[in-house]
Image (cartoon, rainbow, N blue to C red; front, top):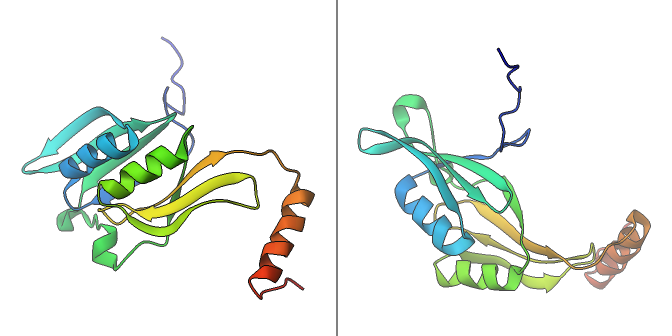
Length: 159
């Protein structure tokens, strides 16, 4: 008998699990906006009890909001304190497509002091995404120097 891996093939140690209102619609939106590939879907009556999709190199699980299982979407909590970082080869195209498909801009695309070009959106299902392309390798010291400059320009110098 072969040894079972504690982390299944194709997964990472941490895998986001989204709870949404309208999981089937969410899967369609992620396919259209982020190029997600649907891997599986397990209906539970008129809802999705579990589904999985692949976006880039990462797997995401999701399910419909279900009171009986205490699964609640960000909407039921009044928002989410958790953000997803999404690295892609062309953040401009992905960001603009997401916005065209109904995402709300939180922070517009811009080159950041830490070496990424990124912008942040809320998807129509209440999840926050920072969509980025890494454009420059920097040392921690270089990032710190740039962060201090940004803080000073914003009237918030670090002490």
